[in-house]
Amino acid sequence: MAHFEGRFIDRIVVLTGAGISAESGVPTFRDADGLWEQHDPMQIATPEAFMRDPDLVYRFYNARRARLPGVEPNAAHHAVVRLQREFAGDVFLVTQNVDDLHERAGSQQVCHMHGRLQAALCTACARSTPMSGDYDGTTACPACGTSGSLRPDVVWFGEIPYYMDEIETRLADCDLFIAIGTSGLVYPAAGFVRRALQCGATTVELNRETSDVSGLFHHQRKGLATAVVTALVEELLAA
Ligand code: APR
Image (cartoon, rainbow, N blue to C red):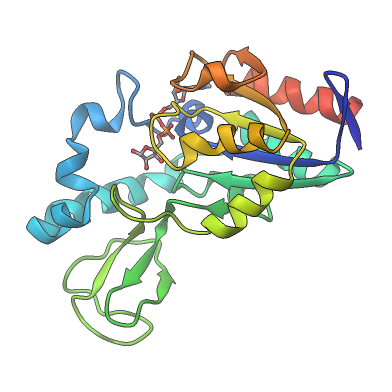
């Protein structure tokens, strides 16, 4: 149990977005240097885009996957691990990110609602296989051997995110909802704060700027994730 802004906290849900990985050198989507400033998401991150030009899509995700070994988790990822390890109550981490920085920082529980870069989904057998290297339309599925059936195991626009039932249960049951580094523009993740509010949780937004849903948070802490996440975790663990 902890005290936060005058109430007992026992169950925490943490939602992260690209902003938590920004200081590790992983580009976000909508900042000035973001991925969607250089690529049209409708040409890359939709099932139709993959049908239309699979090689363009394979190349986009292969390039992002290849950059992962060159970046490291930052102090914000490590602060989340500390919260997960040391908080006396329950912490559920759900991320929109497809990078592996939460895991590499030491998080044992990470709910990747938008999938993971380091995996391949087989459209023949529907199994997801860990893949750290490049793959394309000629790569055989390691699970079923079918060739040409692999796609990035990333949830594209128009697709249903993973683990929504579990996320809903956690949101309905939490006392504190913390959103870190997300613009609040993409649903259903952008709606999690509203659900947490409906269920009586205290809500906190940690972001460098104001997001599209900042008005729905009881508390906003503006700053770089490495500073504001570390400070909030210290406050929660000291309470
Ligand atoms: N510290 C804190 N916040 C930061 C930092 C930082 N160093 N750098 C950027 N931010 C914030 C920005 O202010 C912005 O609100 O992170 C957010 C990044 O927003 P987006 O680029 O839109 O990323 P995200 O919210 O994760 O996007 C959601 O959109 O394209 C889809 O599937 C993709 O998961 C992604 C989803």
